[in-house]
Length: 154
Image (cartoon, rainbow, N blue to C red; front, side, top):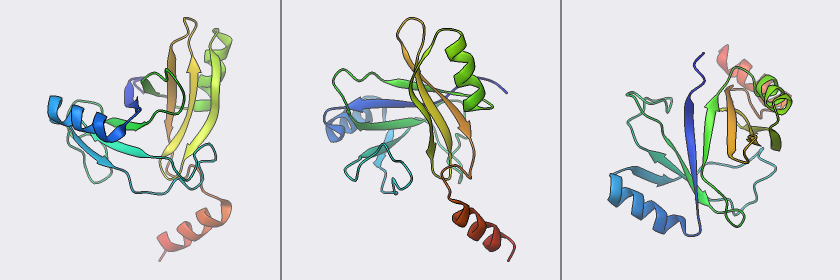
């Protein structure tokens, strides 16, 4: 597996203004995400997220040409930096390895329901980064997973 950047996030005090800026500057397709934040304990009901397409995607949301897509969100704390998400086989394994190498875990393994898992860390120089593990069953309760398995067998 290539450990490449697969997603980025840009924090903004005014997401609408930031979306307009990046649309006009680069022609990016930026739309407010209207999905649920259910299962994301660290996000409140006011959580606001915008999907940023820098390249076209397939039906599954994966880029169809070289490039990285990302997100834009309302800044959650002062001086919150942009963050890159690096694809890994296991958030648990790479989070542990990063800690052994001197990284500090800022947010432990967390689900993005139906998509995958991530953890956010500071490297040895204080730079924020995240590791990402794709897993369509992430954040599902045992009951939800059982229902989906039943639906798939029909």
